[in-house]
Length: 337
Image 1 (cartoon, rainbow, N blue to C red):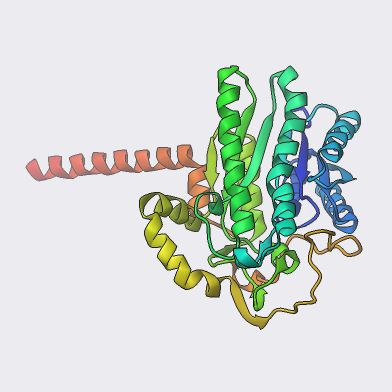
Image 2: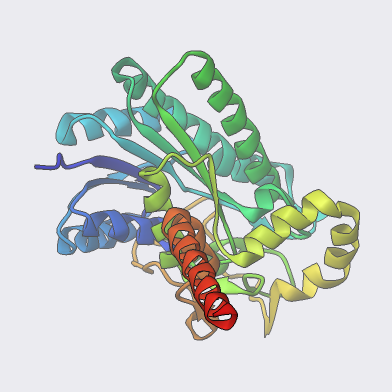
């Protein structure tokens, strides 16, 4: 009989983290939910339990290393050894870099980058002695290809990739059996676009094509159970990452022309709208996993499915090629006869 696995997810109260929690709940996992928003945590826990998993909600600000360490200790006291740790929490500011205050840069970096560092270290303190476990970093195509108006977020995602690559080398040097992977996400229809501090004149939107958070959640679950260094989600992520390696200067010019318009809707932003940079917006209300772009978001990615099923796809294509070759030989033989 399979052992129930214990997974910790940061940023689990809404958006992608909420979808990841449901995905693990469907697999009957013990899911530890870390976030600041209490109502969002309550809703996420209810969904995990309804799916057949077991939920433990721990209000946590991942920018506080002592709070992260305390949450990890509580998770193991109540659910046993942590098998998987998923770093997903983020905060950001949509604005030109010169309009972002130093304290705003600091806060976005502490949550999005240092929150990953603190979560990873808390997981390592427990996993290294057991010589088993998996750490999943939720990344972004923006960890490779930065875009305008998101300098705080892009800088943090680049930092996560640098930290992760360095740590991976150290684990390999020590011949550790811990697995470390990073999942690079595309634009997704999550709650962040209504939560993030926005100094742009119009409301923020993800850059199309947009995917539902469940697409990313399935990729995270897969990455947590397979030995893959990185997973790219969506053709747009592949295009941005590969394109930046081939022609970064060309992308600089393209994004200088298109990047401002593509990240804003036609609706004016309310400058007095509350945001979640300093305080959670789901402290008194549960906002769920999805944002306001369901009508134009994709529920499935052919590229991601093909990437996660390389072996099966290769076998099918190999069989098809073999069958085509056999048919060709039969036809040729008949023509000769």
